[in-house]
Length: 178
Image 1 (cartoon, one colour):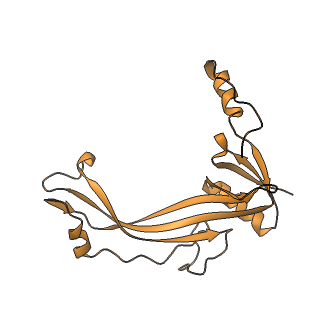
Image 2 (image 1 turned 180 degrees about the vertical axis):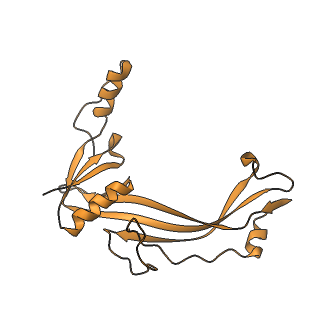
Image 3 (image 1 turned 120 degrees about the horizontal axis):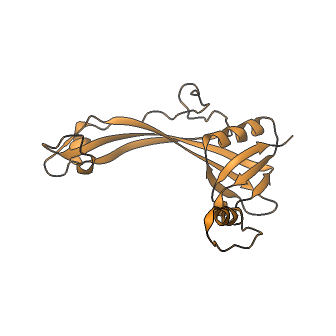
């Protein structure tokens, strides 16, 4: 989607910067057909560092990722593969991926490195897919608060007004319509 405003040259100062941001593609879209997604991921990882180097020297370490499991939450509904109950943010999580074995950890070692105990990390990626009046669907990244507003609107069958970020590359705000 392109901005209906011509791009303005930045002449200098804060006013010019604000004017340039306001015409560089920020806009609003009314979305009747949309899909709010939160991709929850568990990933096993371990830190490797040269033997004899302390762990407080981050430049001398590297992190290896092992198995991961992800689950797509759609519109706040429980995914079939979800394990347990939703967390405090209303998100469901996948089953844990297999923990790396000592053989897995040793296979990734380079030279004389030592490795840490594997840790399980959690991450979430939020996005909204929407269709604007006869156009192809668009999927853009967003934040938790925008995802939640879209979930609330979906539960009540309401459309959304989406505020898009610069160059229409993200969704900054979602407002359920009456």
